[in-house]
Image (tube, rainbow, N blue to C red):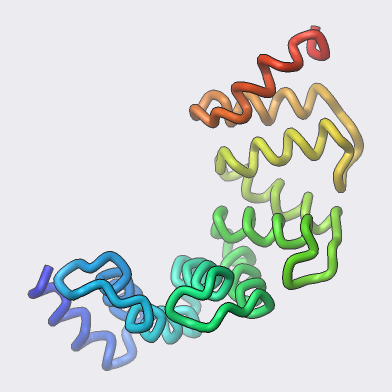
Length: 175
């Protein structure tokens, strides 16, 4: 790992976005260098600004939780949005949750359903479960118990325990 850090650092200082993100991951995970969240954030920021979707998503997490940067929910939403628009399923899910709860944005249930759906369609089990709940309760979508079951089944098939429980709780609804 130490040799990789040396090369990542050289390329990152020359503006290589992938090297910046890889170096940030080294600092985040303590690979070849001591773990240092501020140093990780320092390298995630230029990678994210250059359009690295996974760096944008991770930077969103950093701002949401105040890891290596001051906590700033609006900034988190900005980075989640950038990554979500590039198709990052985790960012799409997190952005959908922000719209659901009105965290860093005005609450908008249709917008929440849009982003959660995009994430679920890419196979993210947490989003699939949430989308099932949306269909069960009519959150941002029309109530549709068969669609709820369909999404819970997809999540349950991936071992998502909350969906497994939902399917056990509601067997009579799906006869």
